[in-house]
Image (cartoon, rainbow, N blue to C red):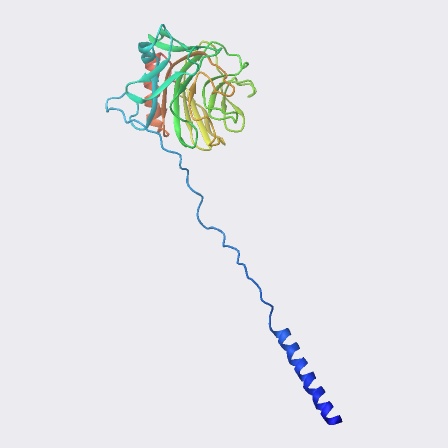
Length: 290
């Protein structure tokens, strides 16, 4: 009998040991989750639609390719209503117009005001023109804006801009500003205000403003004023170029004249820049110094 019970106990112990071994060696069932591998695809490129440019005829007095806008006040005079500019256009660049931002506050156009040519005159109160082109870096990563203009004042305050597309982020704009010590005519460089050149009242200037995504260079009456100055313009600027002000956020209305403006959707070579300067300098009686 004792032997029988001993054999039974041995069988029970052996059974228990096997069950324990299986419970130890058999891993518990789990659900494995593999984290997705990080994407190696590049960021999507800028998908802003390209703006239409014009190639001028071979006999054009300025560089032919890449013209985004060309407005001369003589054309504004021809289409003016009672001496007011409500819509400004150039038949050589027919897809672009500049219209009074406030229809009941258009600027004036004055005949024979500068070297026998007309000017568009802004009174510094509530007049500004809105164009159909975009000079922000999303749609114009590189470009050149050429302007013949004058100011009735050299005072840096109140703030006044010849042109701009500023939404409050120091977007591409030039004009009078008191935040650049010692220099009254300034540039918005995407982060703040920097001095461009000292402006005198009632004096015509020919400015060539060259933009890339992170740099600005400027020439005034043929002489370099800023060269590869660092900038950080953002893509969220106002989608229109405004003439006679900075745009619709702060306005900063210009007090003075704009005789002509040309915009290229590219940089110009030195030879091309000199060609434009010589043409406009002769046309408006602005002395070009090099």
